[in-house]
Length: 160
Image (cartoon, rainbow, N blue to C red; front, side, top):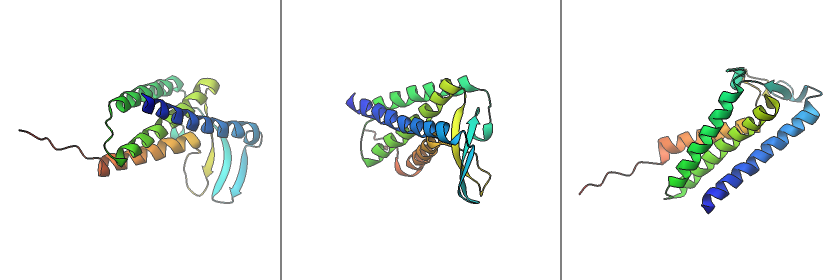
């Protein structure tokens, strides 16, 4: 139970950092719209994203909120059943913490504002404007995939 509390506290702290970065974007960047950081490479660009990446599923705010609730419940159930065996399982927990924090950060935006605040923009490629919560989700998902595909192996069936 204490381990679950630590996980949820970690998610809350990361979510708070995401929300603070969005507060800065709302108060300082929104009035300007755009700040070039490295010309031709990187800008801070304020965007009200009402969908997912590239604006897909625009206006499906409740779908994303329900998905966040489902992910949270699934992760909590998994963590409660998880048996810690080695260091890889700590990385697995970390990846799930990142995914949940990102989902919560963007869900808070959708519930409070009706849109997600995005502000990081790589201008040298056609890539969506994103935020800290998106970084959490992408990093957590990549780590999770690497762990599941390359590191964590099923224990062999021992008969007999």
